[in-house]
Length: 156
Image 1 (cartoon, one colour):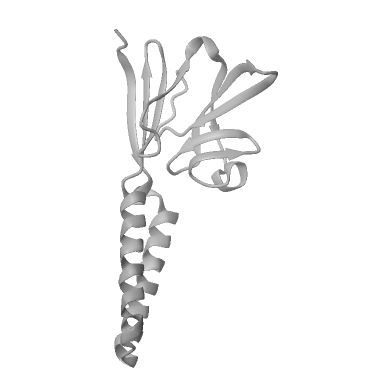
Image 2 (cartoon, rainbow, N blue to C red; image 1 turned 45 degrees about the vertical axis):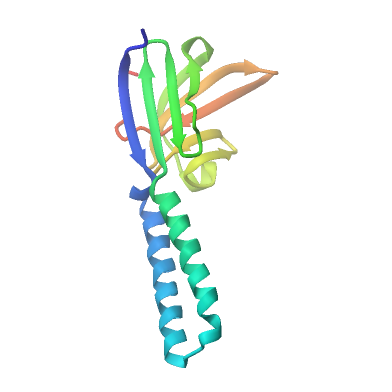
């Protein structure tokens, strides 16, 4: 029985940068549509319908991305849905060290989501604080995993 000690779900949609990008994209689409109707360019209406469909599909996908983290008695479980269907499991025996950290998502990892940066691999939805897990060496390389918790604890 793997009892959950801690569980958290974060949504990418709460990221202020993503919200700003979505707003600018919708604004550009609305301006484009208004321009088309103003100049009465009927030929481009098909292209605009395709553009609207693409934007709606991308926004729906981004709006539904969620980072699920569970700390159970046997391991750490991470899933970034819908990119991960199955849980990514990190057994405690494979964790060499862990510590709460403050990081710079763009500089250290290149942004949010599942990111591979100069400081290792990160699973984050927003913010700049998390828990860094250093895993035991695999093929001679140390693996670092940064998991963003909304309220990192010092008593992990």
